[in-house]
Amino acid sequence: MNVLSNPLMRAQERSLAVCGPGSVQDLHHCPQGFNLGSRLNPAPMLSLQSGQKSTKPQRELSPEEQQELRRKINSRERKRMQDLNIAMDALREVMVPYASSPSSASSSQSHQHGVPPGRRLSKISTLVLARNYILLLGSSLQEMRRLLGEVSVGMGVNTGPVPRLLLTGGWPFISGPSQLLLTQESLLTSTSLAPVQWSSAGASEGPLCPCGICRLPRFSHSTPAPRFPK
DNA sequence: TAGGCCATCTGGTCCT
DNA sequence: AGGACCAGATGGCCTA
Image (cartoon, rainbow, N blue to C red; front, side, top):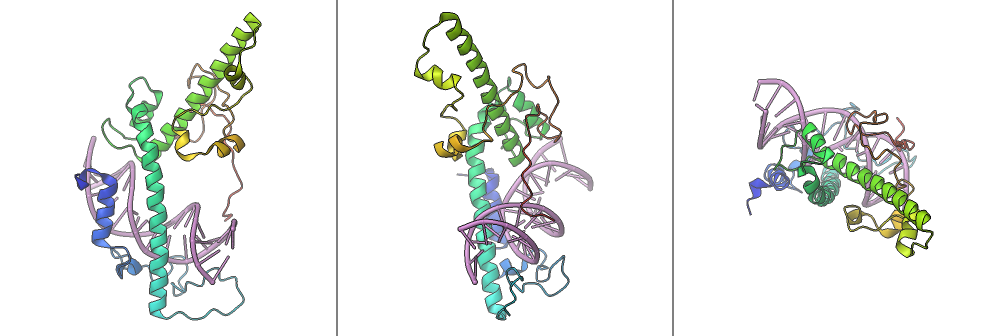
């Protein structure tokens, strides 16, 4: 396998080559060697006194201990980001066929984000496409429910278990992208996965999402309280 | 060469 | 207290 053909591996290769994990350079962020003092706080950095809200006097860390702690923290963060990238790759893997589909409205958006066919989707494009895909599924489901409702009313028959599930608003457990990262439980309990209310006519109708990125019909941007009030 | 995308480091904040 | 999460900063790589 050609390592250089995979941007992710390329990046990892690069980081390993330049600042190998756990190397002393971890501490200095080798390209610049600046991070020994806070950019926001001119006071000596790397005090590493987590929180600093404790009134207890903290034990002074020796330079070696500081190094070791910093290295540990950096390594954790690196691992966290790598896990995130693995998840992103999994999502990407599922979304790529939709991105390359010429009839897909999403593909134009991937182009909008500078993703020519044949190239790896960027993170932002992957997320936008995934969102579009979910919206599409939602509208398809709406439409299906509507049709099933018409049919069952017209025929006056019991529609059986599956249609009833659809008609009552149950979320279908399709073997699609959502199953990659969501459990059945999370699907059932999540309120954010309620069927989307938007015209099946497409994005040309209704107000556009103001975010300027997705440019899709607005369907309620939930704005949870910021976790980090500034 | 400018701009997009990315990985990494870092300090701050929140959660368990 | 330690870990998770987040956002800002920075520099490298790649492409138009």
